[in-house]
Length: 390
Image 1: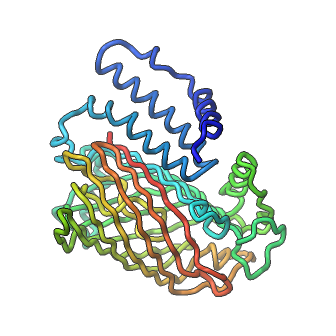
Image 2 (image 1 turned 120 degrees about the vertical axis):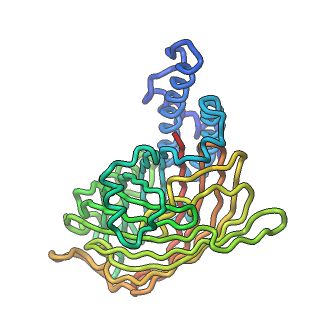
């Protein structure tokens, strides 16, 4: 329940963390708008951080409030939405995935990622040169690039056990950064992503989970002493999506189908996947689904809105063939905990997206089939994403 007792401490901590006020903003329309937008963005970031540590419902509520606070300033800064639709703006995206949306705590238990995609006008020459030499990239597409940093954590299904059973999922953390290259025609999107990171204690996943659980009063995770050992990770991923390959008007709204295929190679994850998702809504933005953390369809952080408020509900299915998953198979060259993985894994996802001018909010609920043979039941988690155009 969103009571004052829950919200007030979050707001107080956010104000203490960001000692900025609009009273310090300079006079003048454009300068005041930029200053107020900076203050509100920093304040909202602190609120969302607090919400993540307390309640997923509160997190979604505060993200909706973010839209009310931020969007008027964005509209004042540029009312010409037709210009916005004619070009690809820079995009900042934040993704938060957690099994707390299913009121559970285990297996894939938390993932966060922040992404920055510069505008199409800022694409560097090296990105253009690489795109030209990749034979399957469309020659007439627009070239984009982007950067991400993130952290994912995995635990057994009972975090109170100091020595988890050897047939339970190994504890593991993954801290990474990636750089991506994309070429898009408006209907076809190719994405190529290079990911570098570290698995093991150096990922700081154990410290992160202990700190968060201490702050919110949850059970202290006990099994991190048996996590995977330190190992550098390298992964190259490619995905091709066909946006709105089939379109059908339905009850005054639009229904469309976007299929995709992908493959990943590396010591962290090697596998291939195929899937699709359906969108149904009004004033659909030009996107390929909301962003997600791998494995699974990655969607897009960047998007082009229409001149009006847009929304859509979506559902999708994905199947993956898994050759290697370090979080199940264990370390590559050192002894560690491991389980017998399943080579075929499937996801079913459903959710909704709201797009208003330069802000897109999304929620995705994912049901994942069992990933290893001794896993007793499927996993379920939620994914909240917010993207802002600049």
